[in-house]
Image 1 (tube, rainbow over the protein chains, first blue to last red):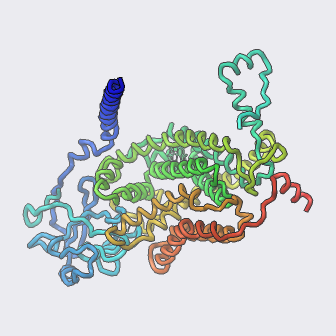
Image 2: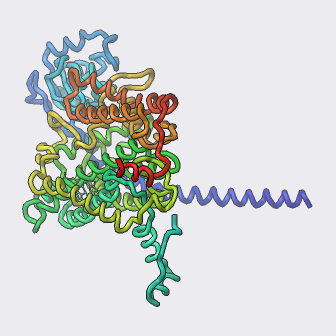
Image 3: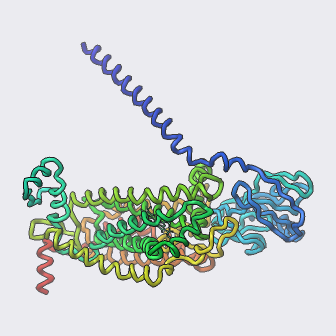
Length: 174
Length: 416
Ligand code: HEM
Ligand code: FES
């Protein structure tokens, strides 16, 4: 008798847990689409890459273009700025990256990076700050002439998006 | 405390209703006869004032929504349209915008009242926790509302605040894109913020109902923090406190309408009258005044600690500064509730208030020079108050003798 009672209890427990598990999976499967609808939609994802012509951007000039809704800085750096960036010892950097790692070989004067500050996303002001690069108006982060963070709350360097030179004057971002 | 009703259904219809849905009985017990300590001062009127504020936001908000367009191409103009063209729209819009500020002014007074008089202590912990929850929901609602006019401050507030989530390891970036509905703040963001800005006030109203339920189980705390002992300590809520609360509301409405009539924009920021431009951040962005203390804390952390980077650490302090409020009932272990009878606590309470005002001031200053250091000091003090000072003071302080009852203390005062 005792074993039978135990037996039927386990059977019930099993059914109970199994039903609960199925209901749980069902609930999760129902909730997911209700949340997923908030993710970037097809029309947002469709504009994943842009091509941009560098003609006409003089040395020492910057422009801001849009890629996936994000502003991107394209700066034609002066020789002085490139030298400054190369001269910085790695030990001084919070997020160590050489200038070479942040540019493309043969096009070292071009610095292309997402304009949003890596702290909370404001747009830093160019040619300003203690390091001749960018300084963020929001919480005071400062970046050098290679867009590397040197001061303030930003944890990492300004992000270099994936891009390639199609020709000497044409780049494709994304 | 539901046995205090003196309700006897008057007519046959009332009796019929009472047996089916005792709604009149319930209202009489909780809105009229409810026994309320007779020594409540004007700090206790802020609860009713807050209910009024929520009512004003909902009524003006529903009206604004009849004229507002949640689309990045039209939102900015539609708010200008409300202010210029809609009949009486200028007043309705300014009551809503000023109303948010007044709502926060009232909630800060209400929270600091609770902190001074120990209203968070047993048996009112749940009441306190629900209150902090309302505060968090209010912040979310006000933040999303501020995004709706789609000015420069709106867009950059949306960018910065959603970016806070990106600090979370691993799931940060996907979560950020989920919240924004894109890689940057754009039309999907505005549209969902409008939907949620409409929804949340009603969620707040529901939590307010729970908050008042949790209040009506133990009853009100009071300025001396001594429990109600018998009926001599209390007065029926109506007419004594309905009238006092109504008078408090009228006084509160004076500065409220002054702002709405004469200076509707004084609490706002001129940059919000420039339409959002995702490529240019204004030179000096500051949140609305009611977020400044927490913003100062977020910003104060500009250094890495161990393996935690400055961004995540700042966010942890920011969230921690609010989460710690939930824990307050267990950090202050002193048995005596009211600060009036706690000689040491009283000093530290006022230091905390000054420090909090200091954080508000610092949150509005640029992140440079001496302000950076001061923000760190004030942030540290904010946390030290909760995790060191309160527990220690609770142990070493010798409270002053308490009056034996509320009625005794009231009589002693009138004889003095
Ligand atoms: C907890 C209550 C609420 C708070 C704290 C609040 C706060 C705010 C704030 C700060 C703004 C920006 C005002 C400005 O700077 O111009 C705003 C705008 C707006 N709110 Fe609310 N709100 C609340 C309830 C509601 C409700 C219930 C609705 C109903 C749909 C609503 C609809 C709107 C609309 C349409 C706008 C855009 C028009 C404008 O900017 O004035 N709000 N809200
Ligand atoms: S967003 Fe740039 S420093 Fe905070």
